[in-house]
Length: 127
Image (cartoon, rainbow, N blue to C red; front, side, top):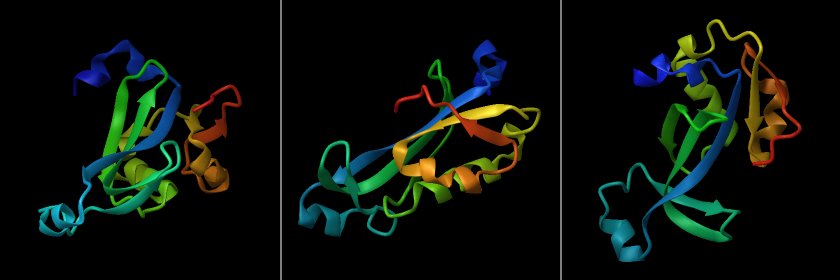
């Protein structure tokens, strides 16, 4: 993977956030969509509206280099998706004992349930 060759890969601070990926607006479009079994209804608090689609979860360095990502049903808890992302590729956490994550407000509550290798929270990070 080209990202692993970049000097930014060694960053010890990662940012975690998610954003909606709207796939349809009208009810008829939702009903005939090929994503009907995967996508779902969700709410976006930053753009106070409901949407039908998926939610893109992204982990990246402070400089913006993407580390990993996932598309998930918007009803899934962001903390669960984060745990699954990190569990799916255990090598991401290897050799990173002092990794610091800045989390979006919705998943800051997960501080006690974070996986091994991830510690702390950067109070100066405003997402």
